Length: 80
Image (cartoon, rainbow, N blue to C red; front, side, top):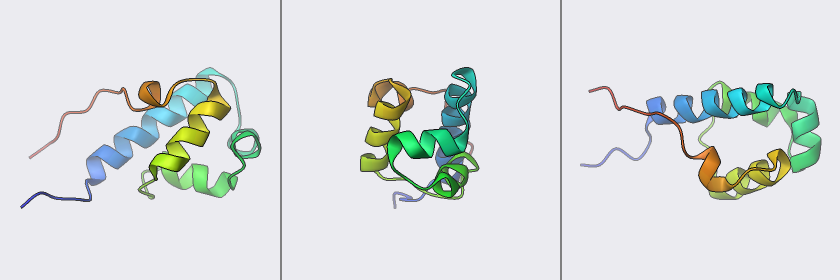
């Protein structure tokens, strides 16, 4: 059976998002304003507490001025 919810992947995505945001020196609040989503949601995504949607990935990529593919391109090795 395929596991639909993968906590490791969600946490790795959040860490990657935070790295991109930090590199651009943008606060969670500013990113939230640019993406038109609540900054608390960004915090939950970065901490790996929220399994985000494709639509959210899209608006985050636009706000960060990167492609959605770039947001999804991060090192991930599933631990068994």
